[in-house]
Image (cartoon, rainbow, N blue to C red; front, side, top):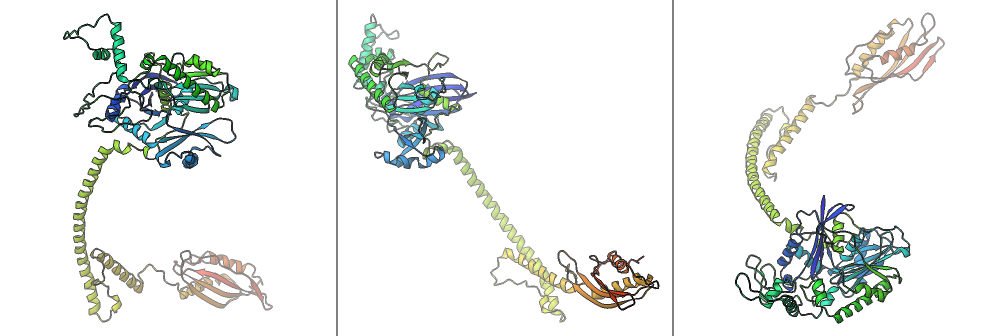
Amino acid sequence: MARSLGIHLQSHGFDFALLEGSAKRYTVVKSGSAIFRAEDLRSTKRLGKLIAETAKAGKVDQVIVTLPASGVVMRELSMPFNDREKVMQVLKFEVESELYHLDIDDVIADFMELNDGRATPTLLVSVLQKDRIASALEVLAAADCDPPVMTLSHGSLVAALGVLPHTGNSEPESREAYLHVGAESSLIMALNGDGSLYAVRALPLGWLELTRGLKIEDAVLAAAEADQENSAAVGADEAGGTLVSVEQSAAEAGSELALSEGEGEGEGESESGSGSGSGSGSGSGSDSDHEVTIGGDSSLPFGISLETALELAEETTRTSFMTRFASEVRRGLAAMSIPSGGSLYMLGALIPGLEVYLEQRLGKDVAPLDLGLADSLGEVPEPIALGAALRGLGADVSPMNFRQEEFRYARGLERVEGPLTLALVGVIVFFAIGFVINLQVIKQRKFDANQMFQVANDKVEQLNQSVIDDEEYPVEWMIKSDFAGSGLPDEERIVRLAVNVRKGKEQLDELMGATATEMPASCLEAWRLLMNFLDQEMSSYQGKWMIENFEFTSVDGTPRVPAHVSAKFGITIFPDGSGNLIGQFDHLSAALDRQDWTLEKALIPTTESVGSEGAKTGLVKVLILTSQPVTPEIGE
């Protein structure tokens, strides 16, 4: 069965979900997440290794990567058509006026169609900067991953919500509102009763806002002190008997806030200095000497999980966050024209107290939503990562793909660079050897051609000398064999000599009558054939007859008709002793048609009476083949 890996790659961490099966029937094989430390972002290789090790799941048929909607420009655009190919041809031109703060050549745009009940198609256009795509592809390349599809979080969330049952009703009152609480940003999404997308709004707030202003060093000490207070005493290390320090206690407690020194990752890699909350810093890693930028707010501290953020955030910070968050949600719902009342379903991060607070501020029923999926360990996959994996199985609800233009084949050449180089070297060697072989062959052929030309030329010279020695032979019989000064290449001289010899032979054959050219037909032979026929055919007739005139014309042959003689003669027939000559002309015409030397049927167009004795005369036309064997038939 097909296996699809969905990755939701964010600036402070990533979530993943591995599915197996098909778009209609599947199981969650594995899911999870990881958070990034500040020093992780200094090395592309380290970040890629972390992703590869965390999401390692054996053979995967498809990898779909989702980037967060934070920093993405989203605009609704009305178009007279919704054909994807046609829209993509004009999409950038249509939204360029909305991107006054961006260079149109530095972004990639894609869209999803909204089903908002308007007469013309409404497109939700998302615009993403190319440098974010390039950075994400660089990190994934270090993880030995080349995803063919790179989409955005709202596109994957639509696919994830597709697992829910839908009523199929497209009326406005059947719309449902969904709120996804993310780390960097959140999403409000409204779906129609048939599951189609009605509207989307991205909120620039996530649970990471709880950590703003939190110093990582203070958080490490606080976690270590809390661990010490819960322990009766600090024991000695079993191996060496030394006391455990505050820093060691925090490390042993598995605090996700502890920033360790950069460990060597092979090939002499080393990094110095501790990470800062901004995620910037310098390192001497051999694999990368620049900061990885995936997007998001780098002013928020790195390496903090949701549980730690909730634990360390003060009550005033929580209240302030929920107030701001509720205001953003209310504005988003108003912009989407979602009426008050109804239900709001929450997905993503679960922040205690947020549901009740939203209910009070929004006047809606707010409830957490469980998609009803879990892996073998009971872990619930993150919805956006789940939606990305579903698209890899064929649930193509959102057609967005930001691997366009130069990113479509970003790593295609890199993956085959080694084999391609080897193949190129092999081709060069092959052509080099082939060139040497062909050069030797050409030299040998040139030598053989010269030898053949010399032998043929000697024969022609002998023939020309015979023509010169015999005075009766005309000069035209000589064949040109001297090509000096003609500029004709040596290898073509034997061809030209053969042409000259062939022309001379054809002229001689034509002169001597040995050619295949058909000779004109003989009128004398046609006259002989016709006279013999008349003499034998009319010998049995008791009456008198006589030939009035003859006309013989020799006709050359054509591709359709051979050479022949066209004969015309007049014949007058007198009645016999009984005074009867009925049918004699028809009998004569039928006898002519039976002859082997007649080409077509004989014609006697009309007959005329002559004098008062009952005689008749007629003009006979017949085509005679003089080359046919002569076997005259005697009429009955």
